[in-house]
Image 1 (tube, helix red, strand yellow):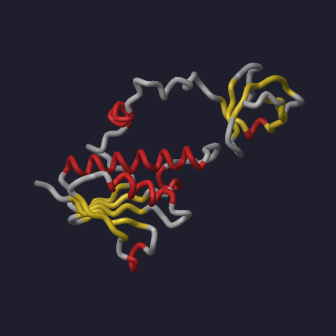
Image 2 (cartoon, rainbow, N blue to C red):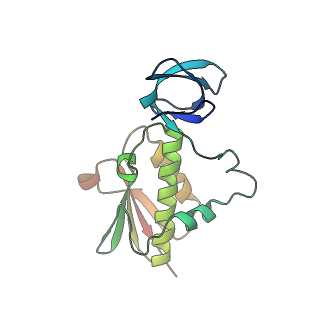
Image 3 (cartoon, rainbow, N blue to C red):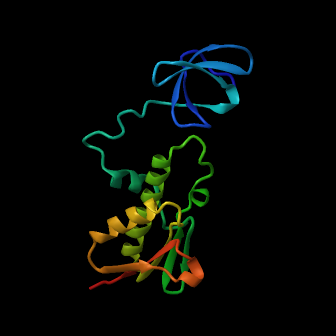
Amino acid sequence: MRFKIGEKVGFLKEVGGGIIRSYKNDEIVIVEDETGFDREFLINDLNAIHGDQSNILNDNFDINDVIEETVSYEKDLGDITRNKGFWEIDLHTHVLMESERGLSNGQLLTHQLLEFKRFYRKSREKGVRKLIVIHGVGEGVLKSEIRNFLDGKEGLEFYDADFRKYGKGATEIELFYR
């Protein structure tokens, strides 16, 4: 891929991006990174950034608008497994997305939490009584964020899922309805 001088690019092997300043040769590009330094990159280690998304999180931003526009569980529930009496979702990033390249841990966590919240909301709409959320063990950040979200909700109980089946990497949620 050939980039134009002045084009915005993202780094595939690290977090961040910059602007193409010049070519050193056919394979190496000089990129001015976010800190203003010129750095050399292989062309294959960059991806083009299209459009300006700098204002996506403004005062009028509502994540529910994005959810409604981007997800429809009516026909395809993605990686949600519907078993008799419960729904299960695997939040491992390699399951949720085609590639994790170029994304920071914070961006990956945000994506996982967004998927969990979509799953939770849809299960409530459908009257599901039991959920299994596979979050993995890791450092426990995703598990902690999920449980913090659930702490503020009424009409549910949550606890570690069956250790024999999921190990320490899943949370079971029981939902109650009036």
